[in-house]
Length: 102
Image 1: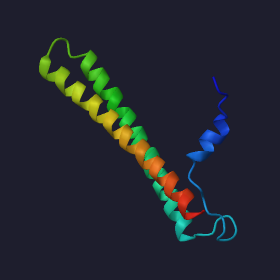
Image 2: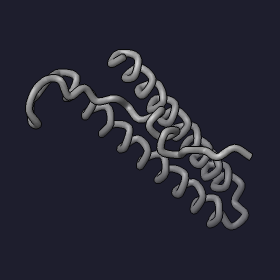
Image 3: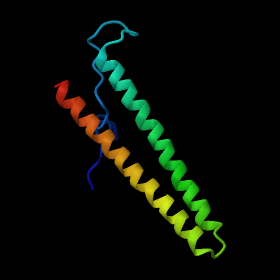
């Protein structure tokens, strides 16, 4: 089995942040956009995790009520779908950042 350098693997999917606009604290458009997108991805990830937890708790506590169990299952599935969309968005943002800054 080949040794995997997880540092290089992680760097391949880390969005590039262009520091060419000046000193720390400068408000270049790319810096602002990068920060806003990252914040939105983090908030979306937290919301997806909460939806999964809420759906799981609702499913577990349904007590045999099919409607409540179906609602909990749907909420958990929607949370998983949301998490997949967020992870794909993050990967696309990383790839575009690498291409633009190449």
